[in-house]
Length: 157
Image 1 (cartoon, one colour):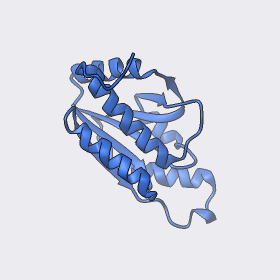
Image 2 (cartoon, rainbow, N blue to C red):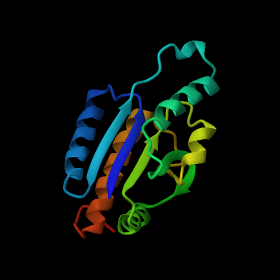
Image 3 (cartoon, one colour):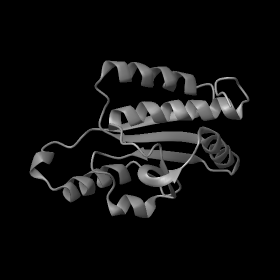
C-alpha cells in the first residue's frame, strides 16, 4: 500500500522541518510514503473563508485519483488512540488498498467537495494545533503505527 500525505502550505519553522524530516526518514522502513505539499493561495485576505476553501479544494482534488482511499485529518473525525489507529492502519494495508491518502487542509478546514470524496475522517486531538504542528504530529503517529504493527518497542503500553 502506498501512503500519501497531502498538505496545504509548507512548514516554515526550522524545528518542525527537522522533526518532519526525521519521521519521514523513519517511515521508509515501514511503508511507501509520499508527501505532496500544495502551495498556500496568494491574496486570501481578499477572499471569504468559503472562497479560500473552494480554491484549496480544487488544488487537492487535482492531486487525487478516483481509486484513492481519502482520509481527512479533521476536527470532526473519529478519535483514535495510537493502538486503535495502528490496528485501523494495518487493516487498511491488508485490505488491498493501493493508495491511502491522508489530507491536512488549510486554516479554514475543508470545502464540502472534499468531504464528498472522503472515505473517512480522523481527529488527532480535541485541542487545536497549528497546521504546521499537525504535520509533524501525524508523521509521528504514522511512524508509531508502523512500529506497533511490527511489534517494535517504540510504543509503550
